Amino acid sequence: MANAGAAQGLNFSGLILPIAILAIFYFMAIRPQKKREKQIMEMRSNLKVGDEVITIGGMHGRIVKIKDEIVTLELGADRTKIEFSKWAIGSVVKKENENKENK
Image 1 (cartoon, rainbow, N blue to C red):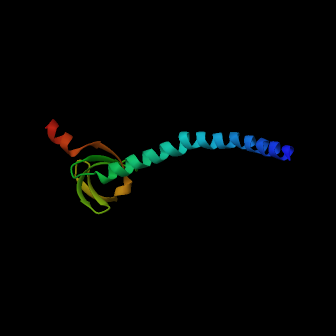
Image 2: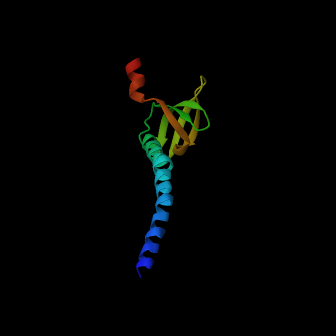
Image 3: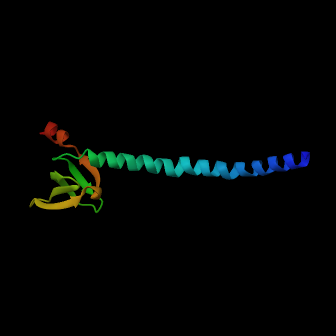
């Protein structure tokens, strides 16, 4: 009986290393990814008319209209208007209120 208890203790100690590796993987890979996704979702939900943005395809433009999940951007010198899904907005270059302060 004493040997059975010792054998179970050895089996548990063999699980410590894989559990530690999984914990390290979680804190170094999965957790930062979720934090970044949360920041992106927050950025997309805070989009305002007048913000200058860059799409995930690399197009630069200014938001002229937001309707539900569709964002209309004004692009280039000829002010071409193109509609994008909100998820296609990669980053905000300048917020609308920063544009007003600089003028």
